[in-house]
Length: 145
Image (cartoon, rainbow, N blue to C red; front, side, top):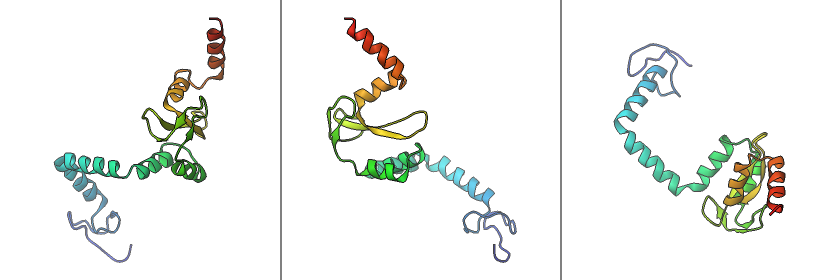
């Protein structure tokens, strides 16, 4: 911080400021909170529209911050166009939750990317809690009939 400065809102001298905006952190947070209370619906509508217009950037953000994927895994996922489900072989035409779309399968223990699978296979894996033991028991059960 160079020299003295005064918060434009409360007048506090040399307080911790927020991103060089000449506003102290306390006033910035209060001002943001007040803005969202007054304009919450407008703000969330703008965010919703942006997400609809930028699905690839939303996906990239989710992959980067919600999962522990490496940059190469993220790049592979973002550049994927179509292919077959790694489990059942069904043809998949895009990423998403629609009927013929792929979902990104990942290991819930270590967070690593596994492959692209269809939503049905993803649900099945979720129901058996990614357990190979339960899958084997299901196979034995099905083969009995």
